[in-house]
Image: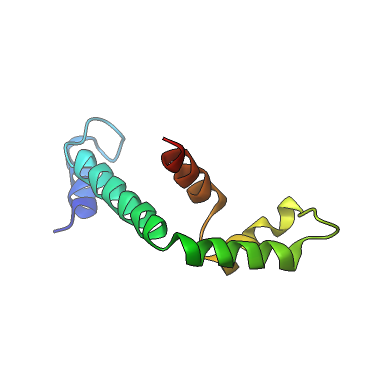
Length: 95
């Protein structure tokens, strides 16, 4: 049984479907953090490819050097990286 299934079962039985204490929630959060860290490390390891893809996507959607925030989801989808991930990586590389 996965951690998510265990958490749902615990909530249904012990918390009557509510959001009280759940010992399985920590496992879910830890798994999510590990996946996020692995994703960030993958981007850092392949930063050249992601930079080129981001620059190409921004160039495609820019109008007179400006991009619309409405185009941001399209840019992120084409580049394969989100703006938030870029900010996280920039902050880590600045240290």
